[in-house]
Amino acid sequence: GWRAGGSMAAALVLLGRATALLTGAQRLLRVGGSAERCLSRGIGSDVPPKRPLTAYFRFVKEQHSAFRQKNPEMTNAELVKKLADAWKELPASQKQVYEEAKTTEWQNYKEQLAVYKAQLSPAQAVALREEREKKMARRRTLRARKELTVLGKPKRPRSSFNIFMSEKFQESEGITAVAKMKKLFDAWQRLSSSQKQTYLQLAEDDRIRYKNEMKAWEAKMVELGREDLVRSKKQSSKTSETAKTAEKLKASSHEKKKNLKLKESEE
Image (cartoon, rainbow, N blue to C red):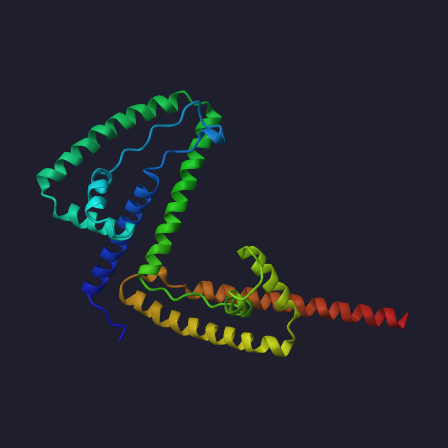
C-alpha cells in the first residue's frame, strides 16, 4: 500500500540531498567551477570574485585526479559517488583542514566582493543583483524538478501528436532533429481523422493513466507530510471555472456569427 512511516520519509529526504550533492559535484568537475559571466552584460569593469568552494567540493576537486587514475573504468557519476563515500569516511581532523581553508577563502571573498561592488555604478549594481536573482531562481527551479523526480511524481500525459512523433521519429527523414520534427508535423497534418484516431485514443489512455497515478501520488505525499506538493482543490476549481467561461465565450461567438450570416442572407 501507500502507507509509509517516518523512516521512508527520512529516506526520501536523504535521497534528495544525495542527488543535489552528486549533481553539484558533477557540475564542478565538468566546468571546473563557474565564474559569474557579467562582463558581457556590462556589469563592472572587472569580473567579480569567485565564490569559494565548500569543504566538500574542495576535497572533490583536489582528489579527483588521483581517484580517476585508480579507477579509469568508472563513469563520472560513479567516480563522484566514490568521492562522496570517501568524504563521509574522512576523519573529522582531516575534514577540518578543508573547513579552515574554506573559512579563510570566504573571508577574502567577502573583502574582494565589497571592493568590487564599491566600484559599480548604480545601474551596474542593479544589473548584478538581477543577474544573481535570475541565477538563484534557475537553481530553485532545478532543485524542485529534481526533488519531484526523486519523489516519483508521475510523468505528464503525452498529446496525440507527441505519441505519433515518438513512434515515427527514428524512421523520419531529415539530418537534424528539427528537420525530422518538421517532416513529422507535415505528415501529421496530412493524416485523415480516422488515421489520427489511434493516436487520439492512446493520448486519452495516457491522460487517464496520469490522472490515476497523480491521485495515488498525491495521497502518498499527504501521508509523507508534503501537502505543499498537492494541487489544491481551489486551483482545480479555478481551472474548471476558467474552462467553463471559455466554453461560454466560444458558444456566444458561434451564436453571433450564426445570427450575422442569417442577417446577411435576409438582406
